[in-house]
Length: 189
Image (cartoon, rainbow, N blue to C red; front, side, top):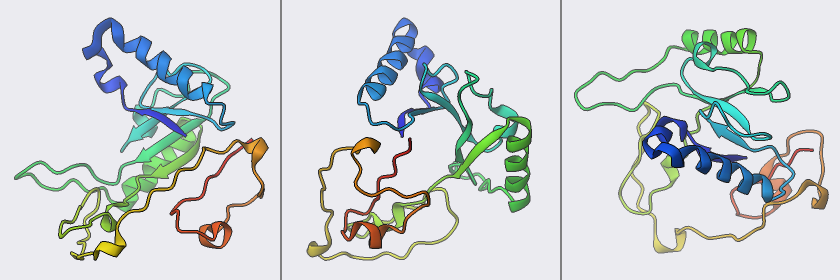
């Protein structure tokens, strides 16, 4: 699970209050005792046991590596493009570049996990507004009726020791959860 995202990019702006915030966020997350690993993206000095991870396009070149020998090398956001600046050309990576950077990350940084940046916004509009983020595909505008609004589910973050369903493989969400909560918790021991 992730606590904080790319805080190191702005940490210096908070002067002496920046590092204590990082330590507080890590302590708070670990203190929840979820039984799952916590990560901080682009936070080279993530306090133990929180795992420092890389976000970006070239983590095989830019990632400093795990800040402790007991942490894995994780690329948490493999960006396939970058936000577009007005009037500038779109910067989209080729499949060859993406594959090369992944191979470089695995071989040079001993990478154990690469996650391609997720695109979830196409279904998030409740009015005639669309979001196009990190993609070059177009999204049709759909007007949702009032019955199709968001639902809120309040569930505690599970602890592995208290889970009722355990598997050594990934599970298909709808058949497993039999509900509309739109997610399935995965916990690891």
